[in-house]
Length: 334
Image (cartoon, rainbow, N blue to C red; front, side, top):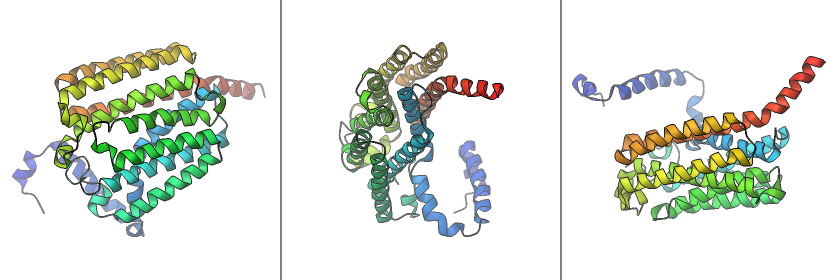
């Protein structure tokens, strides 16, 4: 339904700009031959959360580089990446399947494919199970420990989506899964040391980081949680107490990340990036304690993902640098 000009002027100009951009993009996409027949497939890709898959892949890759103390084998890395992406896509599609009847309540999820009727719930469930099985098959060809850790992480996330997100301990399954995923990535290259101090510190940092991400996202979903009468932490103990919990969790996560500098023998560059980035995010968190609203919760959520991605990329770059430098010197000599 078309809006009158006065009604448009009362809306957020950023929303209007986004709609204008999307209108142009949609018209361009319509020109692509057979695009209409690919809509369900593209919708499933959207449901898999490509941006979150990229963040998870970068974080897992940093664990792999630490396990190898350098660049991991390319063949194994490709298999591990496929395995991780299949698992994450399966989890996210299953989450949309479980929340399909309530996603229309929350403004953050009102445009998800199942809500819009682009994908049927039955199709989403079937695809999710197929991707789950394929991820386990891929993990089987890596090693048994990797398979077991990944399977445990996926099952925890399935349990979260199906039931546990409706409880006061809803934050635990995603956090435990976040602990297990870097362990699984570490086990793919160094299974004998998977329960040693280095992978445990990586896993614990991931655990508390996931608590930060989970609670900040939960605060942005409070309207839907109230409508569903979930016993979520953000709803039961109010936003400010959730913000304090997020602050404490991030401080613990940051301490583990700083300790990783010493444990993994990382450079001053890693220490500076982690300390400065963590300090900036910590400053925003202190502000967030006094302003725990929808807008700030979303800012915190995306800022925390950006922070962990940058830290992980610094680890990857640092561990890859000696090998890349050696290859470059050999190239110059030849």
